Each structure stands twice: as structure tokens, then as C-alpha cells.
Image (cartoon, rainbow, N blue to C red; front, side, top):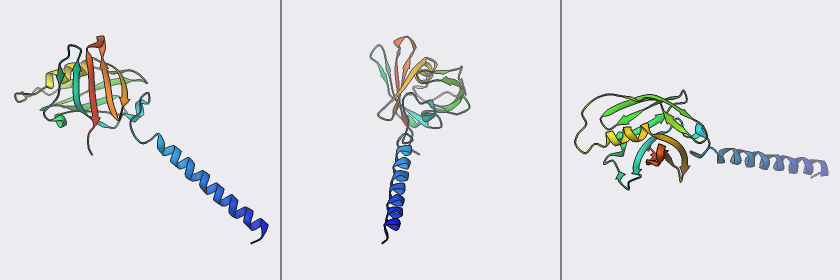
Length: 153
């Protein structure tokens, strides 16, 4: 192999390696929800794991699929409160998440429903962060925290 051809080959290998490294680095930030990056939590269906109240009580739904919301990129939220649908607006920045008034359907849910706690907690949202892939929302006045996990697709 000629010296010129050898340098071209090495340059092509080096360029290919750099491109692969850049692609890998670019994917690193896109692996999931990230604290301080609101766009990473929008478009995800979040499912209630638990509400931990400041008085030590914990609210855990028997069926987490009944307690979900999705933040749309348009500033609208939609979801479920057990047997009812919910919809409304939200505002978010790198630290705060606040829901506007939420509208719900008004069906009577079965005994054991935690829809009232869920709606009360959502009405009190204040700050957010992502820890271990879960969305953690702190309620105003240190009323407690809401833990949510991405719903399976």
C-alpha cells in the first residue's frame, strides 16, 4: 500500500470513529426523562406510584393504570382519575410544574378509589425532578410528594 493510500485509509477510520462517538454521545441525553429538562417529561404517560403526604399517610392506588397523566407539548394535560377523565393546562420550567384548573368527568368511582386524593395532589403541584427514571413532584406548602413512573407502552 502506498503511503498516500495508507494515510487516506487511516483518516477514513478516524473519521468513522469520530462519527460513531458523536452519535453515541447524542443518544446519551435522549435515553429518558431528565431533571431540569421539561421536554423530556412531555409526551410520556406518567402513572401514579404513590402520594406521600406530609402527615405520614401514603396513598397507593390498587390499579395504577387508573391514575395517569400526559403532558402535551402544547401546554395541555390529559389523563385519568380512576373512572373519570381529566384535562386542563399546565406550566413548566426547569424546576416548577403547575397545573391550571383541571376539568374532570363526574362519574361515581367504585369504593376504594383514590381519585379525590389524586386530584387534590395534582392541584397542589409545585416543583419537579426526575430520580431513577421516576417523576417526583413536590406539592406546595410541603404537603407531600407525588411519585410517578412511566407507564408501559
